Image (cartoon, rainbow, N blue to C red; front, side, top):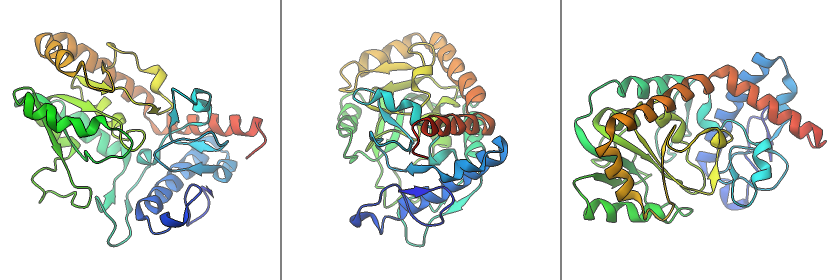
Length: 287
């Protein structure tokens, strides 16, 4: 376990995770996020909270970035903004996998928002990411759907050790939103940190069901903010065809999602939520 005012460490590290640069990167991002919250709320005790920075929330009483809505829904009150919500840029350790920088959340979110103002040139659902995620088997089925229905899906596997523009299968969220008429979000090892950005996109969003969700999940309403798809993807084709055939209605759903993101994903709202979690933990006398 680690506290936000510690320089090194991560959520209850196991021995084989000591060299996981991504964990340390998340630590740095969460430190920035919590320091911002401490300043905005005037409560520097927030920096004493113990935090789990992993992709899957647990039933341990500490700050989590997500929770299991099917088996541990009571843990929602201990969940707050994740590491991708961090302000300011952070640089990964030399040689770490993935992107070399984690940029300021709002800078990147507004890039996605502005990309959504462009007229899409590809009349399909776009998704680019790793299909090897251990947590969600449905990711592995995405390329199968792309082969079976190439006229409506463009799903590509991206090697997480080669996330760069030199990789022909890599596409930034900004470019994906700019090019594709529809976007999709799906669970990974646990939750998906991509969802917040896509809600800014102004594109119809297909939300694939998953067990691990973020604190704002219950505030998102199917067919008001997103188009739901079952976790086994059995209704993916039908839902996609509905969007394409009713695109004006789907755009209204996308607008609702963008309005939600603009209202809820601010530094002030992030800080309020962190304070809310701290109060809940305080009530359980574990902070």
